[in-house]
Amino acid sequence: MAFNHYICRQFIIQRMEVRAKKALGQHFLTDLSIAQRIADALDTETALYGDSRQVEDNPGKAEPADENKKAIDVLEVGPGMGVLTQFLLKRPELDLKMVEIDRESVDYLLVNYPQVNGSLIEADFLKMRLDNFFGGQFCVIGNFPYNISSQIFFKILDYKEQIPQVVCMIQKEVAERIAEKPGTKTYGILSVLLQAWYDIEYLFTVGEGAFNPPPKVKSAVIRLVRNSRTSLGCDQSLFKAIIKTGFNQRRKTLRNSLKPIIKAKAEKEKWSEEQLSGFLADPVFELRPERLSVEDFISLTLMLS
Figure 1 (tube, helix red, strand yellow):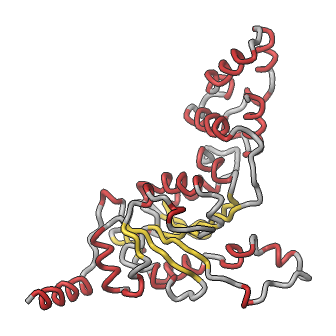
Figure 2 (cartoon, one colour; figure 1 turned 60 degrees about the vertical axis):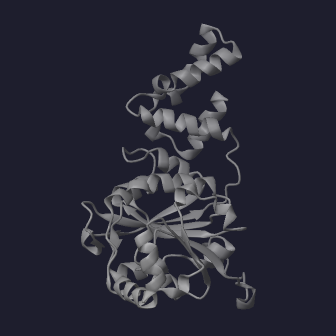
Figure 3 (cartoon, one colour; figure 1 turned 90 degrees about the vertical axis):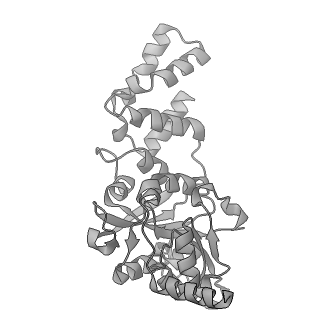
């Protein structure tokens, strides 16, 4: 009797669709052609050997032999009903793991994609110790839940030395913000922090009809590839504080928005009013934060250290 109940449950799971949960920010991708394009956007040459453009720019440099290539560790965040997963599983060069917080999705995946058993982690990505699952480098891919996409990127930054590449689908507005250059209203905190460590490419836009349920906004797929920077050359905590403080009051010039940080610097150095005035005479303090590049923020951090 128990066995019959198990078979019945498996049959139901195979035929059902997972119910999208608003609290988890779920919008399941249903367009198979989009899923294929996202899977194909993961550049294994870049992940293994650095920026693949280096090979194109140096035609005399031979590519590594196939036998020297190893499987690339990949983590899919939020596989849902496996629409993207199925295309990743078809790439033999990938050693795929998945992390899914939704129990209903986990059940669905285990029944409909039995080959993921042992590779599917039921957990909250934001609370995971990723180094417990990956000893070396690994790539991240996924249709990120819209309500936590920024938090996912901050998590990725925490593991930037282990994550050489990210391919993800997020809200179009967030994608544009991340990939934006200085000088626009879209450019912000995530733009600077991610561009400090990654080269970012906006790949393509995805319409609302590619999902169930359809979101109210368009989506976009972007690719982040780790750049060659090994150090900021400044205090990273102060760097982040300056960026966040500046953009949290982005309508103000840096002279006004950074007053607490400037004051702390003046007290530390025991400046006179005249010395403080001389320091604030630097033209950078007349700018708003969106005018500064990553390099400008590094220079400003060194000034305020």
